[in-house]
Length: 217
Ligand SMILES: CC(C)(COP(=O)(O)OP(=O)(O)OC[C@H]1O[C@@H](n2cnc3c(N)ncnc32)[C@H](O)[C@@H]1OP(=O)(O)O)[C@@H](O)C(=O)NCCC(=O)NCCS
Image 1: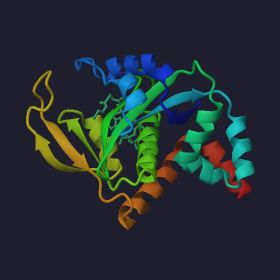
Image 2: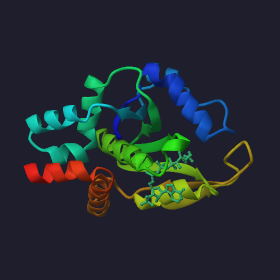
Image 3: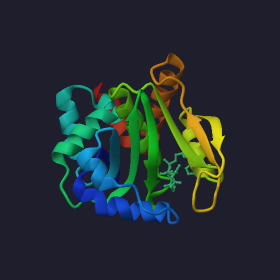
């Protein structure tokens, strides 16, 4: 199964809320997805959905010239999925960030339990970083629970480093929130690590497609 990333749409809100409840059962209310989609231009949500048709993106990418670029570049996936995805798809994960004064602050990321450890969280983060770059963000930031080692490992992998602690930040159990931030997104060290990780992610999760891409290029 391959997964496509595309912007969240209004019809995705019930599934997004379901994922949110599964990922954050003690946090209520869920993010105001509908209100944000309708009226908050600063907030961006992306979803990962099951992609049934593998042939179409390959054909489209061949027409555009570089399949490998297509596979590794999240941006084109947004457009492909936006144009061609049928409605009624299963949404398996989501990510959201708020963009303000050059800072893209991740407000949520979650993957359905049954779909974890398959690279989807990473794909969502890669796509959000790509989108933040497109929107000229300079850094990405977030808060994560002190006890959430899985999420922290994901963020650290992508260059987020601890930048402080908000004591008792989470209202359900007064747990501390660790503030994490990236280096400047356009800096050479961040970009070289990010491009390497994108490539490694594609090679790991779509080896067959990468092989086809290499043989075409
Ligand atoms: C955090 C979360 C989004 C990760 O999604 P995922 O699809 O399972 O993650 P991936 O398979 O893409 O893993 C990518 C990296 O994340 C880290 N990671 C993910 N799950 C992990 C786990 N259970 N233990 C340790 N590291 C983990 C690893 O660094 C992994 O890279 P690796 O495969 O090279 O080890 C998912 O666990 C989730 O939805 N959790 C509940 C919601 C949540 O806590 N969100 C974060 C709020 S701040």
